[in-house]
Image (cartoon, rainbow, N blue to C red):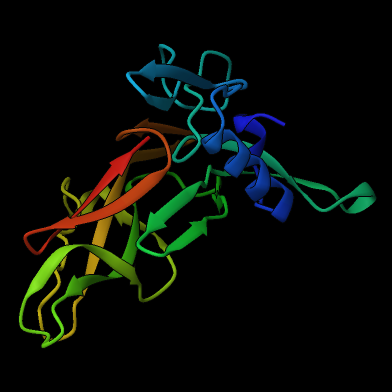
Length: 208
């Protein structure tokens, strides 16, 4: 099992153990679509980029969160191939989410801005008067969101946390989705799994 296997499909106890072994060890086998680099005493795992768009054809960018994917649901005679946007892992404070693929309706042409939205709770002081650095936990589960291109070409703004509740909602851009004549393509906005952060009361996200 390599990192590509771990980040493909649903997580399992065996995958979590394998990921722990990789993080604790000195050698990491990347697998297809991933690249491992040693920087000082840190090991960086990133998605390989290839030229061209992120449609389902050859030459597409392989991204473990946000590219177009054809996947199979069910087994045997009940198996069905679907097209969707590839899911991935979100790290938010003390919670990790394995976000499932987002199925697409290829019969509806259009353009959309695709994002993941998640409500998070920031760290606060004991008196709940100050926002401290970092994210404590997630207050909800991640939601896929599609904003029609005709409604504007900018993503919705984050709602940053307040000292009273510590709660805020982050909008993580994934890219522009286009469906035309039954074919889906994606112009990705970053690539890789998502880590939610917070500094000075401002929520942020990083990919990789």
